[in-house]
Length: 47
Ligand SMILES: [Zn+2]
Ligand SMILES: [Zn+2]
Image 1 (cartoon, rainbow, N blue to C red):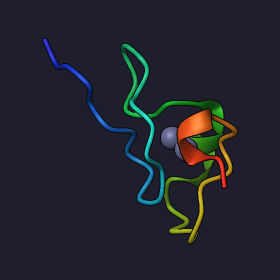
Image 2 (image 1 turned 180 degrees about the vertical axis):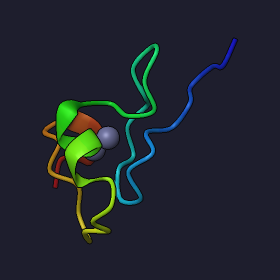
Image 3 (image 1 turned 90 degrees about the vertical axis):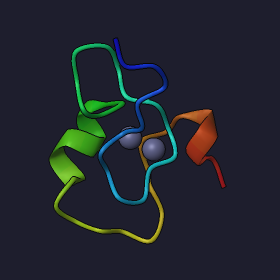
Image 4 (image 1 turned 45 degrees about the vertical axis):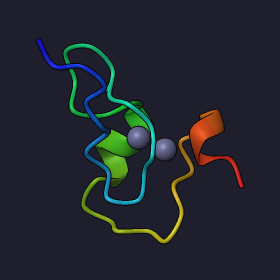
């Protein structure tokens, strides 16, 4: 059972949701775009 698996988005610092490689639909859609900052909106990616 994976614990604290990181979101697969290259620039995201969040933990992935259960059953997903990403923390959010934003990251699922942007996963192929290596943005400098993540805009998923989670506190861990706040800036
Ligand atoms: Zn993020
Ligand atoms: Zn993410």
